[in-house]
Image (cartoon, rainbow, N blue to C red; front, side, top):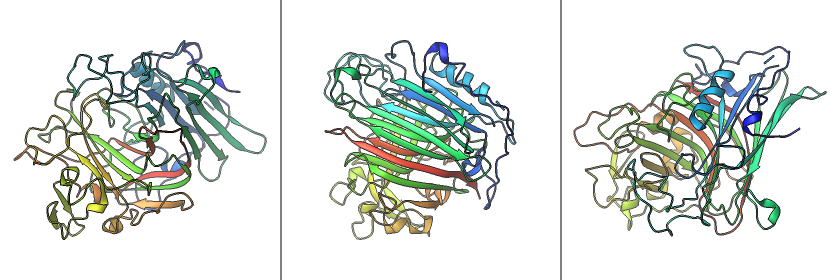
Length: 448
């Protein structure tokens, strides 16, 4: 039976039953960086977090606060940040080299009330400003969603099943379009792996929604955060020495504005190459995302090089400048934007949205292209899209070691250590209600 998650139901979210816990299955191709390699462990650990535009709390849903939940199913078993740490302590599994907690379901609302003064600009607190740049239906548009939890249970056929679902539309009974999110997980006891089925629907009031399943750091700053988080990455992968294996089957794409990420990697380092330390004025979140929606165009082009990274590096380490119109692979890049706090940018340039993260961010969005073939990434439009579900083994470490990320001139190269790896979609300000639906399984991060 579904439970609406309120403060009073935070403890019953932790489901217990007295059955055997099967240990994680080791990866066939090397050591796994995640606590649950390939999602095959019967004792599931999965958590839920919901955010508004800039990963801050904002206006809470009635009786709920900022929704956080964890499903820690053993076949034996308060505010946003503290909730995650608390749930992590309840779900924690002892392991080597360090304990791990859970897979993370992340939901996010892209509405931004510019009159709220809630979101900093590249880490700096700024006063309210005129609306118009972001979707918002008025006061309250940055609310947290209603969350329902179906605790994982075992049926008479040996199938374990559970889920989270809900809506950002708090008054959905009034009619009209309604946003909706759902993640349902299922596995047969003792065989196979967990299959996570996702569904996301936008609405008139909430046209910019994101839903991801994340493998986050077990400790420290996961991608997009400036506070301690919990997750399932017991070893942080570092470029170039890791691969990612996963099975993805997209049923509905979410429309032309759906930036569906086959893989999204996130980390944080300063412009001088130093590790992030929680100082939002100098920390920079770095992302690289492979978008598989064939309706997503390349904003990077020979006539708009400001949307391209300054250079491209081939698998044999040849550097191609973006003004080399005969050789630069413009079609391989949807969009590059530089950190808003960078001091030595090469003109022309585009800077990233300064509000959607608590600190400045840098974003490199890729598209299917033959240039990515050596890394196992999609090579043509339609690869991995609707009707083309498959299992991928991506040389994420090899590719991410060659991608451009900004650094101050003369600074030592940053160690590219990735604290978040996720799959899912960002429906980016759709002008009509859209539905995305997909399944994800076999997720693993393999250290090479």
